[in-house]
Length: 97
Length: 509
Image (cartoon, rainbow over all chains, first blue to last red; front, side, top):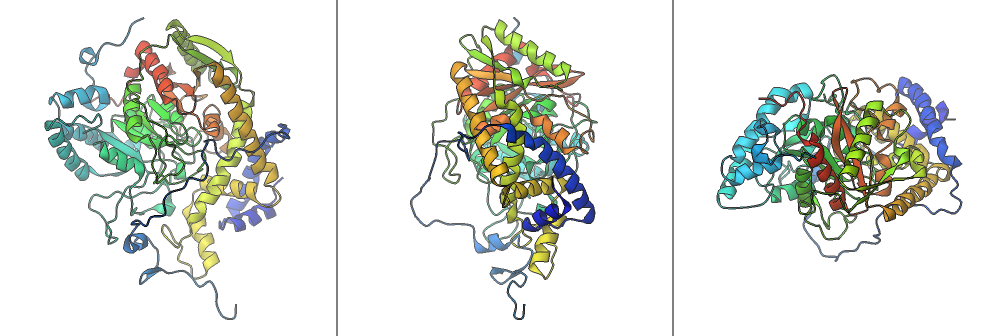
């Protein structure tokens, strides 16, 4: 059973700002969905390993050769805020905080 | 058994509604130009596109210019099969829209993934799909509407409005690749690419009365596909004939270093694999796929298709995939968990919508809270919950274990049969708004398709008749990397059943 406090905690983990109304709806909808998902708990998986992906590939390597990437100007073109050749980010570390 | 007449004797459909096979013969015979084909599509888009809401961006000038180049190449004897053929890309594939100096490229198309959070985004690079289809000579018309970040089964989760099904405009075309499916059904493009994470190509193909193929995971590069659930996502074609789908798959399939999960196995000539018969094949019908709640008209059409395949000489056996009913729960843990990680990149800092707040945490919360729509938020919440401390073993690990069981059941059954045949969707197209209030009811649309993604297998949906005047889809599921057999069965069925000629009421000039 997911509580309102759970929804607020998970939303904070996901950095997702929810309105009052959205929190209310999320509590009921997530409980409804998790009820359906609970069916998995009945499956005996004691002798079963997990599958993260289905293809027989691992550790795909390539030669460590430099190559052209996206130019700085193109990479910054969609930035909401920039300063010179950099992304501009709100203050992370501030004196006195 | 009546077989379809050759193209030259078929009743003449309007140009925009024909198959690639039909028009490419005309192109090569110089009886038709690529410019005429592009114009035919653009006229349809101008007439129906806004009403159906199929396209989010159209690049008509660039398409006409590319068509003139294609006509010159055709005149010089260039024989690439997709040369001069107009197509559409689901707006989940990035298309290069910036030059090296970061300036907008003339004719460059934006990429939104159906989300307000990417409104106005111009990609600095092209997706593998765009690169490969350009190299094949195909002509990009525009970007199609889709559910936000490909999350949905009706296209109603697009931030840019619902798409209308050309068969009945009060109904949905399916989703998440609903714009691609509706555009191909309505003659607005000769083929389109979509993406399929839990059914997002096959289910809209079924509801829109066309062919849609989800290739094996790893068959087609995902480079430049906006990520939803990275262990499930795959790119695939929509078209109006199985042969057309085979041609497009041949152009986009194959290893590419930019996607390290694309597998380095040879790409067969898929068109040559269409032998026109199924006499030496053994086909399994999984009994669990005729689920409770399936519409009687859908079951009837699918059973009739199975009977026809038997008449055509295939051996039909009933098989069992007992964990099928665990597919939905498994999927709705794995896909949201992967999505919650993938969508962490939308932070209001690097690109996309920003709330512009001076405080970092507030800026994250507000940019994401205002930028994402309700279904995307629901899945981020579900996925974050399933991965959070204390719940990981009970949800995420458990789902990954059940995934092992689901895959093992498919592998076992597919040792005894060449392919599986089943319904694609339990229903035909439903009314817009009918399922938006109940997320679980919406999720059930994909009960017959999402186990195939969980196991990474190829699956195609082909029209197998109408129920209440709306298309029903037959699903053919194959062994990993055996798209050739899946397409061969769908093609033999299409030839014998004659449903390849089904067209919606919009199919007129």
